[in-house]
Length: 269
Image (tube, rainbow, N blue to C red):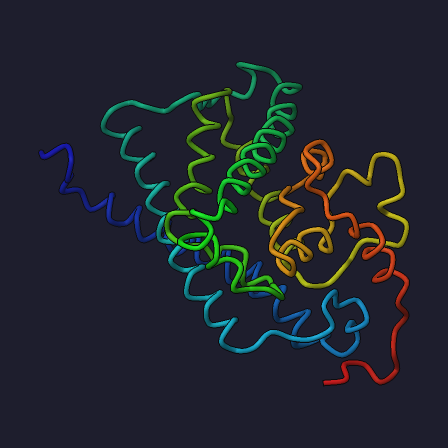
């Protein structure tokens, strides 16, 4: 059997299953959030809309198109890892027995993945904003100046490769149990949707509390899309604060949005 191109039906089924699973996650979570906030509750929750206007249909089409391009690349990453394990025995630091490292490490590894991912995202994101890179790659994601949940995977293929590469980086850095990885992925998906939601869900004064102020809000990332610079973090904003890239109007903007009250007229459009 050719080891590079295995003639194995299970491989093709694996590819199909991985693509359908990735597409299903995107459509259920991102599509569900879009349906709820932009269609079902559009009028009722308009006062929480960060930028009080709605994107054009051309932007939505771009978000969908590039998101499915990214899903194909993420699927390829998963299939490559499956092939490496099946035909070459390369599994990185995956382990099967949860007791091998213990329950405390299981939960600590989830926290480590979040911290590692936040750091990886911040610095690769800043790299994508270098003028020589941005105009060829990251500008695709910034077509969504007023992002929706459909924009979570809206990347140029090169950026999708960089973002998807974190899984390999993590897998060959620390021991990871499959269960911990799945929990981390759920946290990542919900965080990514929250940041691109276009609505602020956190309560007033959230950014004034000692610990919670380090957690990113939808307003934080929305301002990045609107102004094209600053606010590069994913889960947290400590890298932004440390490196001086936090938008100076962020907390003021958050307070302004969370002080709004429902308007009986709802969505003016």
